[in-house]
Image (cartoon, rainbow, N blue to C red; front, side, top):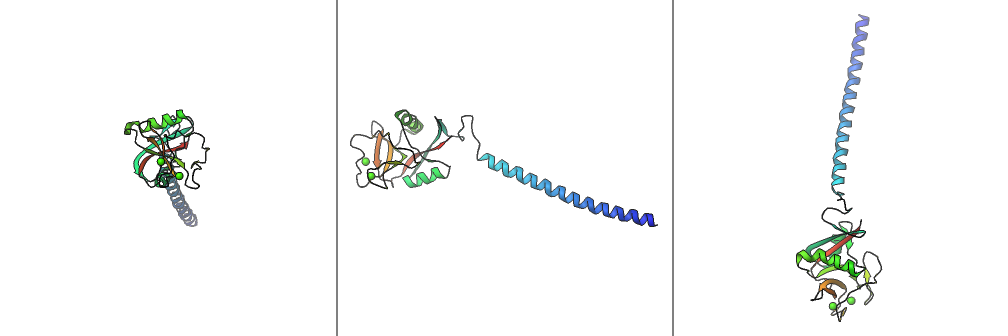
Length: 179
Ligand SMILES: [Ca+2]
Ligand SMILES: [Ca+2]
């Protein structure tokens, strides 16, 4: 009898141990599943093609570029770029300018925001990604600050040069970020 009781107790103990173990296994499995799911979601935002840029972005030297056809004010266009970890594009050479223009070709070379502004101080042009402003293919007679124009549009006029334009105009834009 004593042995039987002891056995039962032992079985009881064992079975409650088993229950706890099963619960722990279940919880662990759930946690693993949740982590796997979270990592999958996180990864889907970071899908990169072999060129090192996110899907839909074009690589030009060490940067990724995206043409945004939706017309927005300059500030809203910049905010849209920021939401993707980017800035409105800075442009540093004629070859870069041509390559960025080529991103607008499918849309018929519309006037398009890039990231240059002289809003902080008239006539002092800056790139909002913090890079140095040393290249600027202005159209003849531009920048003219006509009625306080402080933002740069590319693809202006027949020669598709740059013009300073009122920042509240709604235009497509080009975003850029480092690879
Ligand atoms: Ca200005
Ligand atoms: Ca102008």
